[in-house]
Image (cartoon, rainbow over all chains, first blue to last red; front, side, top):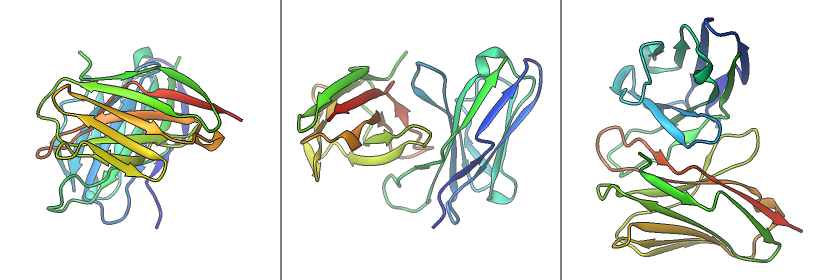
Length: 116
Length: 113
């Protein structure tokens, strides 16, 4: 079974540019999460999709970040315009949505974003 | 405000030794406490998890100890091996809603041969 995949693995852009990150969850996983780790800090929650709907976007830092999950499959996270403080590793995770308590979240390898 | 505090930041252990990583949380609504292991270039992977109805859970060389009254939990790695060298994250979440994970800052473990 394929795991969570993310593209690109690395991205270096200049301040003010736009970057779009993509996440393909494990097939059949309705839950999709985005997290971010800024250097030296903890991994922080950004938002949560259930299928194509945003369940919780309380962690999104500001309106420069836009996440979508068309058709409830893959998801994109767009940063426009990028700022220096957006640099970090962006992780995507997915899990099944069942009545079972706390399904495991499976993480992708992350996208390392550097804004210069 | 950091909801999950993890220590130490880094840890060096000799092969065969015991590695201990500690975490403390503030939100008493948390009811799921996983530990994730991350190797360089990879994403975090679930190692072991515990719920507050038990005080200890063991899987092979890995044990979680949980102290609900103190709001603390720890990971013990027995007979540590060089292959255990990785970054370890504790996390917490609560059932219902998004079940988002709240992470500690991570501990970089190095096991010397």
